[in-house]
Amino acid sequence: MTFAMLLRTLFEILMFVAVVWCVFHEDRLAAFEKRVFCAVKRRRLKVAAPRPTQPQLRVLRENSR
Image (cartoon, rainbow, N blue to C red; front, side):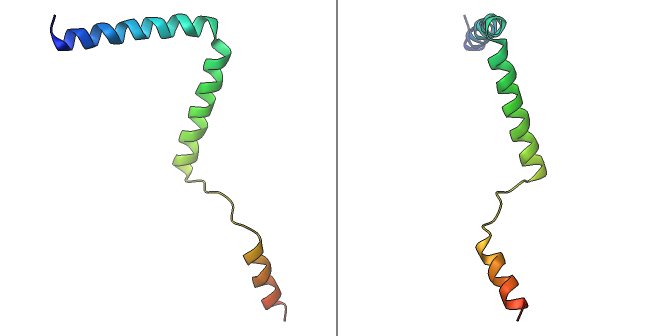
């Protein structure tokens, strides 16, 4: 058995196990898909964490004088 055939066989076995697991745990699979989709969407839109509000308050105070 060549190395490529061994890798292919292992991959097929892992895929079969994943399909059987997904039959019994469909809710976990759906939650995982949602997390992956949201992570990809965040990276695609380049959403960053919100900045703290303290520096913005200082700017507003200086401008109000």
